[in-house]
Length: 183
Image 1 (tube, rainbow, N blue to C red):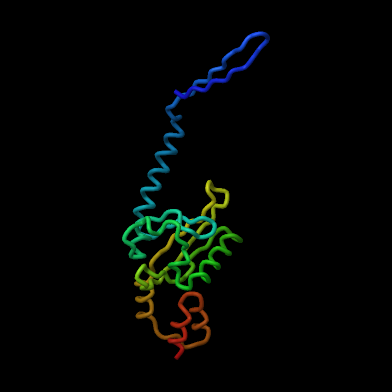
Image 2 (cartoon, rainbow, N blue to C red):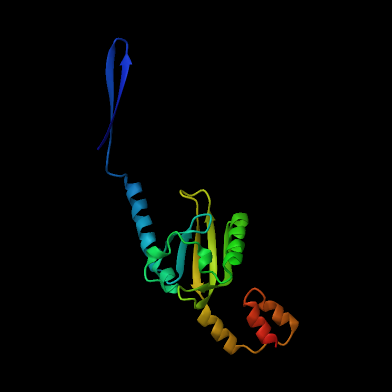
């Protein structure tokens, strides 16, 4: 039990008010805690990278897949670092993501590259959500490595022949790849 006491005066005497609370959580609170614990275990093992940052983009926590994608030796090394450190166009991509999250609260399938600890790039898609009323306020990012899928798509498809087909590639491929295909 949890005990709290308050002393107060009434008429000519001092009285003590005691309050006893059960230390065992309510069944609903236990179920909620068990569900949150299970959710954290699932997120840590999901095959896509998952990162939670503060509102400035500094990493608060990340799952094992994110650490592996960055080829980092330990997960603690990513905490406190800005997400822009690993994004392909660093400040540009992070500013676009953060601006969209502030305005719309959600980003879906944002194409970019993620640089590993050793500098090797990986083609990724980022989906994100903003939770400004959370305790603490945060943003969550799901990062999917799409490099193999894009390589298969490029090998399977013919070169675009019209300006319309090239225009469809804008935003889906890096500009250098589009220029390479046009030449």
